[in-house]
Amino acid sequence: MTQAFDAIVVGAGQSGPFLAVKLAGAGRKVALIEREHLGGTCVNDGCTPTKTLVASAKVAEMARRAADYGVKVNSPTVDMKAVKARKDAVVGASIASLTKWIDETANLSLFWGAAAFAGDKTIEVDGQRLTAPKIFLNVGARAVMPDWPGLAEVGALDNASILDLDVLPEHLIVAGGSYVGLEFAQVFRRFGARVTVVEYADRLIAREDDDVSALARRLLEAEGIEVLVGARDFAVAKSGDGVALRATIDGATRDSVGSHLLMAIGRRPNTDGLGLHRAGVKVDARGFIPVDDELRTNVEGIWALGDVNGRGAFTSTSYNDYEIVRDNLLGDGRRKVSDRFPAYALFIDPPLARVGLNKTQARASGKSVLRGFYPMARVARAKERGETEGFMEVLVDAETKRIVGATLFGLEADEVIHSLIYVMAADAPYTVIERVAPVHPTVSELLPTLLGTLAPLA
Image 1 (spheres, rainbow, N blue to C red):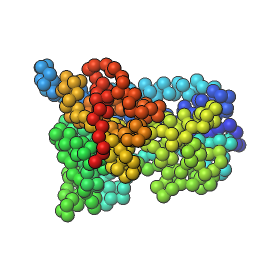
Image 2: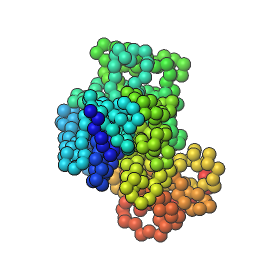
Image 3: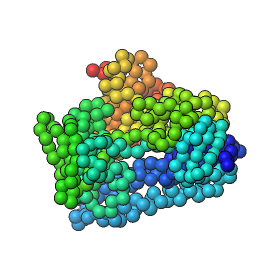
Image 4: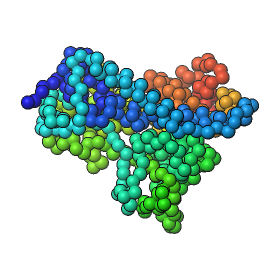
């Protein structure tokens, strides 16, 4: 027997539940399918739990630095079971709230199980067949586990399983020197573990400008994290009760031996097993589902939202995907993916926040670009807080006076960046910021000063 719905939403990540509830509220009969847990990566093993750990690690670090502020405390110790319990409580509260919301929504049916297409507009889940003229795929992504020799036999942690640890690793080896890897590296170092980061590229966070990568490395090494870059020919083996990661670096073989290995080398979309070929939905060489500017796949009546479409790998972009589809289906406007600015943050401490172009991209754009630069060491709030590492950098189109990009690396950068994002979204010239009387002492108050340093980008 086949159950008919007006819409089927596959995946309960950051797009799926909101879209399902909105469609149900508009009178549609909706099926929401989830195979593992409500909330997707963000709530369960992404933003919510990791930033809870970042907060605990920050407290531990500040306790160690207490004497710098004239505060005398005993040497701090970290109770990993209590850290995990706090994390679990925060995650649990989010899941409970989401569950209650879905359960109380009329016209919405929740199905548990792995979904797969049985044909055009027909989905099978846990032995049941569902059909609908509109299907929305929000199935997310997972950590890449490469075929390195020995890895399958020895095993490794990923961004999800590492969150289950309630003991402190003696020595954590992190394979991957980008966003996920660096956050966990700093967190566990601040908890008291020895940490080594091994990266394939010749620098950390290689998509960023060279000076950003260099600063990130200096900050992490200053905290005692060992950083190895330019690694090749990886292999994994058991080493006593721990694990050894072997790699070739500068032509020489090097073994990093630790108690735990975290794999953080990238993400892959959860499209395998969906039976997309049965519905005629195309995927690219990496398994992502190509979509147009309104998130539609190549098949009429099927959309792909969130990490799976390759148009953004963040909670914010997934939620924005939902907003685009919602407004295009139920609203009166035509919203597009290309209308948004690429913006994200790396939540090490201090945080790195980015929007639009960086210097490398600006030079390649062929535009006449102005650059403003201001060191955090000259920001009053940063000096008062004793956190003066980093800088603020903004890029402006010399002809239009529009902000085309910014890199903020320092105290509260993840919050300050939004002042620039909103000006960019308003399509306003940078000069509107120069006329503001800001609140003192803050980090944001220095944005007019930063823009006052504009000069041609070299």
